[in-house]
Image (cartoon, rainbow, N blue to C red; front, side):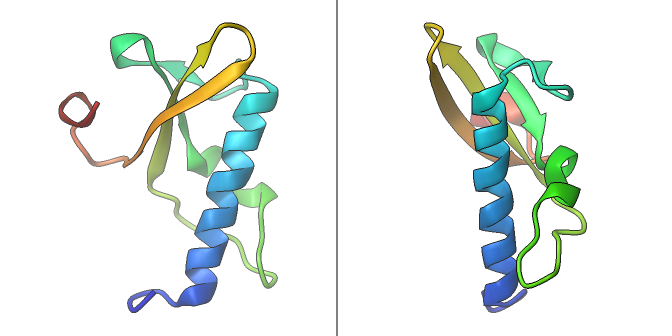
Amino acid sequence: VKKFGIEAVDRYARLIDFTVEKIRGNPQEIGVRPTLKGLFKFHLSTCKDEVSFAGKTVKKPRHLVFFRVVGNEILEVVRILRDDMDFETHL
């Protein structure tokens, strides 16, 4: 909030919410990639132009959603990590 402001925080939160719902609706969404430990990853930048708040979008999202599908119905979000982090260490 101090660095980017409350509107930027709201935009990013909406982008995360939208992205998770999009994955939930179709876990084979274009851009979903298999990764470590049986998980899949999806970069927020894939959805950045689909979400706005106060007329603005997140220009350069830096996070990925790491998830798995449990059974055929449950989307389990395991972590949301910045794209420059060592994924293996944090998963």
